[in-house]
Length: 319
Image (cartoon, rainbow, N blue to C red; front, side, top):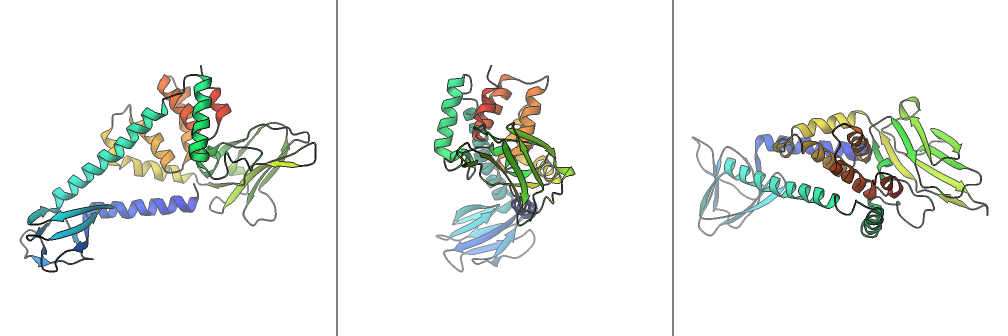
């Protein structure tokens, strides 16, 4: 995930959080200009019209036959008169409904992730099905126009400075050429020729300005003088992004509603939703190496690797 993208997401979350604290409702549409009023405790009723913002605590009153559309926390709701709506209760009902819908997607994520990950045959079929349906989830990966493929967890925002860049093996009589370069730079940040299908480096020791767009690419010269290459894989580096993410997560009501045993899985789900693929990868790997690792942890990691187009790595986890 691009650093700019993360900034915009966090900015949006911040605005949404502010809106939630103030419980703001936006009136989008009213069927009658005289049929909707707003009042607060001890105050007089006043007419409200489309485009008006009102906040809780307070009440909206609709006359007979009046229909109004309001938006609260990105959720559109239709109100019908005659009725009196307590905005605090209305906001709580909308939040409860949204939470239920979101958590249902999370439970579906767990259920689907642990399917078809027990045997090499199941894993290969799952990977093939995923490539067919989602094209590996990242533009360029899994595409036949590139002769060398790389895992999706090495694209976007990198939060761990020690990085092992990996790619699939191909014939390489002259070795692989690796390059990490910032957009528009005359010289690469890092260039190397090697025989293995991976390269480990510490981004803190490189001239890598994380907020400037960069990409990495691997190429291999073939015996017929043709080249096989990966896509240009965009990367950003920001160690603080993970701390910001976790602070946002700790304040999330859905996260807090889950048991301590489920919260780590929910965090992994949210990491992937936010595009923090490298952070998710490191978290899966660490959990699998811990004393409390379970079969479910292994299945979830395998499923993640398949979504990241890392079939060979996923196959090493099958027992």
